[in-house]
Amino acid sequence: MNTSRHKGLSFARRMYVPRTVGLSIGFFTVAAAMYPSHPPAWVWIAMILNGYGWSHLAYLLAKLSKNPYAAERRNLIYDSILGGFWAGAMGLNPLPTVTVLSMMAMNNIAAGGPRFFLVGCGAQITGALVGGFIFLPELFPAVTQVQVYASLPMLVIYPMAIGLVCYRVALQLSRSKKALEKLSTTDSLTGLMNHGAWKDLLTVEFNNCQTLNRQNSVALIDIDHFKNINDTYGHIIGDNVLKQLSSVLSAGLRESDLAGRYGGDEFCVILPDTTLAQATDVLERLRRTVHEHTHSVLPDLKVSLSIGIAPYGPHLTDASMWLHEADMALYDAKSTGRNRVTSARPGVRVCERLTPEFE
Image (spheres, rainbow, N blue to C red):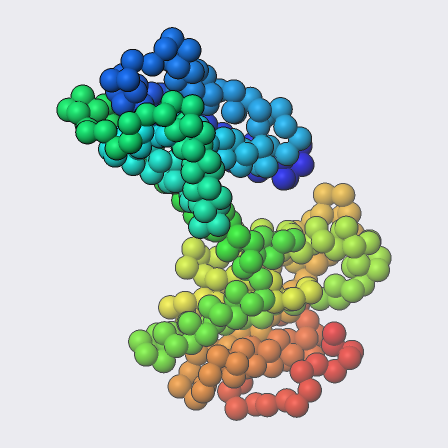
């Protein structure tokens, strides 16, 4: 089933319940307005079929159509024509007419907005002219007490049915929005935060450190010789290494720690309320866990990590400077032998991030 057909069927299902409820109770509104004119038997049969059969037929037509969405929009136009027809047949009796046509208009504007509402209004007028021409009723007859009572269920129950449908749609949209937000901030391969989302949180944490004087550390993690792993074992194994490291990060860090994929074979971590010594201890354990792990299929594959840590300090002017210090610490870890955790040296600046031999 293609996407457009699935959406069309979903639209038809959403309209099925309010149409069924509305026509079922609307029958009594129309019947109360038509009764004083003593219509013939065929009119009562038509009212019953419209009230209790049309909703099921409309759903069946949409379900069997190649384009359910277009079919359901046509059904809404038919609703408006039929509603207008009964309004004309009852001589535009004020209360029943307003009740029936306003419910139809509610459907149209909910399903297609103002433009479709205007199309529905045109259909209602057409139906009213046809109904008035066939029955030639007395126009604007007095509203009876029975007609008032017959209109009340329509005025109370039908809006509740529409409200329930709208509530369910709102819940579905909320869930879809949350899923899209998660997709937009998640790295598809590792399941960790992506580069942009992590850097946004880094800025938030930096501001918290400035205003709340919190201890905090940021770390950059690089897989040593990752290009050689890809060249030797292939990119599928390389991807598995990235996934395994993300799993180790998720399992070995606290819930408050914020891990992400910085790009390529580089990962990043924010460790809130953590001193440099505590952050070093956590990441040293992480480094040992990865280095000591033996791949079940490729026992000769050994993975090691170079990690650079930078604690927050008052000398830092912005989040980029903080990240730069972690970057320089990572440079030191790679340039002094790799497979180690190195702390930042505040004030040290390097013009080039990494020379080619350390990539």
